[in-house]
Amino acid sequence: MDVEGQSAAVLAGGYQAERKGGAVVTNGAVRADLEQVFRSAYPRVVAVAARVLGSRSEAEDVAQEVFLTFCRSTVPAAEAPGWLSVAAAHTALNHLRSGRRRASREVAAGNGTTVLPDVADAVVTLDERRRVRAALAKLPKRQAVALVLRHSGLSYAEVAAALDLSPGSVGTTVRRAESALREELNRHASSD
Amino acid sequence: MRHPTDGTLRRLLDEPAGVADADRAHIAGCQRCRAELAAVRRDADAAADALHVETGADVDGAWRRLSHAVAAEERPRAAAAPRRGWRTWLRSPAVAAVGVAAVLVGAGAAAAGDWLQVFRTERIAPVTAPEADLVKIPELDQFGDLVPTEKLDIQRVADAAAAAKASGLTVPEPGALPRGVAGEPTYYAGARASALFTYRADKAEQTARSRGQTLPPPPPGLDGSQFRLTAGPGCAAVWGADRPYPALIVARAVAPTAYSTGVPFATARDYLLSLPILPANVAAQLRNFSSDGTTLPLFMSVEHMTSTATDVRGVPATLLTSKDETMAAVVWLEGTVVTAVAGPLSGDEVLSVARGLGPR
Image (tube, rainbow over all chains, first blue to last red; front, side):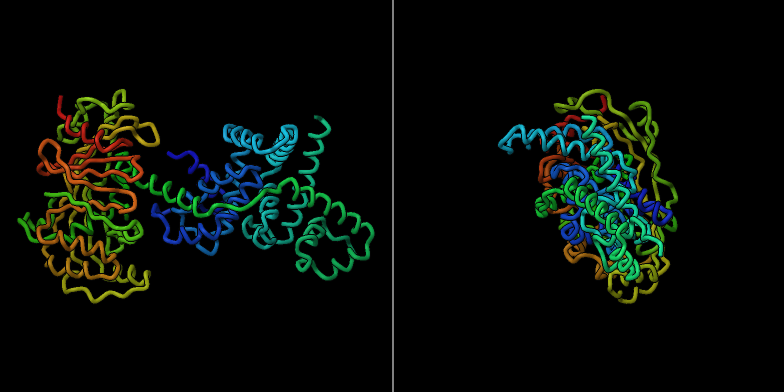
């Protein structure tokens, strides 16, 4: 029934299916280690989502969605940080690509304008943010996820494990994403 | 040698130790690779700038928010939507195991063929404990095999008359609806559900072991003994059934009963209550119910719910309200039939609906 929760579940399921050939297993019960995992992983999960969305408040909503799915899953505790980061990246990218974020983005934009002293600066900052998000939304999803995870501080080994890549190809994927991001941003800049 | 790949150059920026010595030596001495490395670095820096965010999160605040969201998911499941709710109710550790409870509180009663009735609902009483403890209450299938003999099957039906026909119960109808609740309800009905539970000492031990505990040896005769658990038939009227959380639910069902093939219950009960698996405060409250075998425990968390004794037209009833005032339910028993009114309403509103119910 919960649309938000479902999308996280589906995405996380996709991630698991990619890795293990099966869906996320949930047993319906709230896992006992939830608070412990939450407290240690929450800042990073928010940071991953914020890199995608460019907005703290939206990122916190995504983090809640991801943990709601996680809390009934049977993902082993040792794999939780990687699982949560990938789920955060996927869910945030999905929000980015759908129209769902518009309302909250406009609210966030309104707040941004009031705290920044110069309205012109704010407009430029917001426009740049918007262009970055638009560019990110156009990248192939795997590249976008690898890019965001890497820039969120995950090691090559961690990104490799999370996306089922060899550590060697993480560099290639991230490099492609960065070069595609530059091209997207330049293309926009010249067409503006 | 061949020039290292873009990916290797990219990794060199972040994790030089992850790049082979030969590659590093090559790049250091190769003008083309160094130029490429500079380009890779420019893109990486630009991406880092573009993706930069101010971090720092309010973990405590976020944890409180998540806890509420988890609890909000639990509560409507337990008390609301009958289709999901009843099924979850049978499985949910929070509203845990009427079955375990029935076995625990059962005492001798009238015989019915080979089956001895060990539990019948004559009273409903809340068992309160911290949520953390309720989650720890084991489910029945962790002590043995639980096999459904009459599957729980709740169907949407056309109208009140069809619900009455399918359940054999009088369908309760509210006089006046609370503010914000409107339209025609959706009706549901289900036949009696029953299950056969066989106690398995090895399974119980496995459960205990997985929690790092050991069980005392079971009393003679308990291993392999069988219990029959029944509940229903039942029916419900749901307003706003298509919404994530319905606006109002009025449900009625024949209360649970348990039978046994005749093992000594006092022994079984004392044994189960003594197990280290059950949280001590829950066991203590259940022990208080044990004398009569007629009290259906309603498990609820002290963090989220408050229970108050009240009455519905002179019949003792239990009013449950969530502490954040988002949900209320009233439950009462008349004869063998339990009726509940629940919704995202105030305590006064559900009571007013309950007191105005009648076949009309």
